[in-house]
Image 1 (spheres, protein in one colour):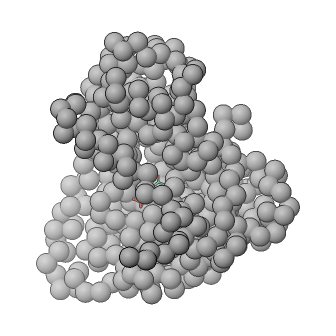
Image 2 (cartoon, helix red, strand yellow; image 1 turned 180 degrees about the horizontal axis):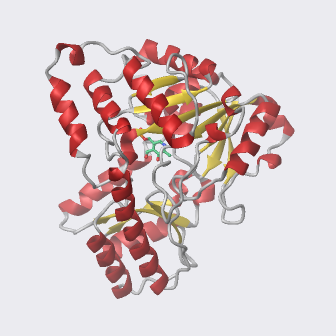
Length: 388
Ligand SMILES: Cc1ncc(COP(=O)(O)O)c(C=O)c1O
């Protein structure tokens, strides 16, 4: 079988390997405490299920959807952006439904990256930005996110020669995997940079609803004039515990949204309409479920941070997301520490190096498991004398 050269350039998806390893351990009798993939363990609110059940057997729900989504879904997204961020969106051409934001982020590259074009990609980052750039024939220029720069890219350090070939700049705040946040001043700088260098600015806002201690993450589109250069991706996955439902949206610059819709209309046929109707219900109702989710994750984050700090770490409480970006002890690498946690404690984390070279020296804990399991993990670390 002669596979494409393209396929050789991409690794197996990070979590495929991790899930395989987990399955092996469980099979051999290990009680694995899983801080791996960021898949909320909390339930999807019942009113969303109810809406889905109500529409499921209607004829309309089962017909081909339109690529961009039902107008009623796009209107609900626009209303939500207005209410949540005070951002105006025209549902006609500034909103597109997605089969989860991963799908949209992946397809966007096909609309903007040609052979040899460069994408400026945070390092570490959610793997899809890099993989999609590579699949489209482009090259990646890493923007290191480190503790020294507060996990914000230093755009003024990108060489002129790179900028000449660069077409796209990705930002993702609140950030996966570091949990870092950005304010509107940073976003305004990114918008100005994108305008100066003629870049499409891609904002991945998957975690906008997960802020703690009163922190409410902003949208990049709140920056005046951002819509001239920016497209933003959001998803119902984390906000409403709907990862498996596969629904998200791309919003912002109409030319960029339409370009993405053109790719999508040729490769997929939109989101199952019953899911769109359920998503309208999710976006339109009160935000009580968001607040109660956040209360759970905030408490879990505190338990993890307090536990790690009792073992020598010096971590601050999580400000956003459900990820703790934990430095590895001296003498360990991301990979060796991940292996040690698994072998000695049955604790599954993700090696930071899996998110890019600057992730070396860290592991990521996703707190998508009950607090009792987090406490048990801290006990196991203490018993195994694993300290920072
Ligand atoms: C930063 C970031 N963006 C996008 C996604 C994709 O989410 P979904 O495809 O479920 O909308 C994820 C999922 O983990 C993520 O961490």
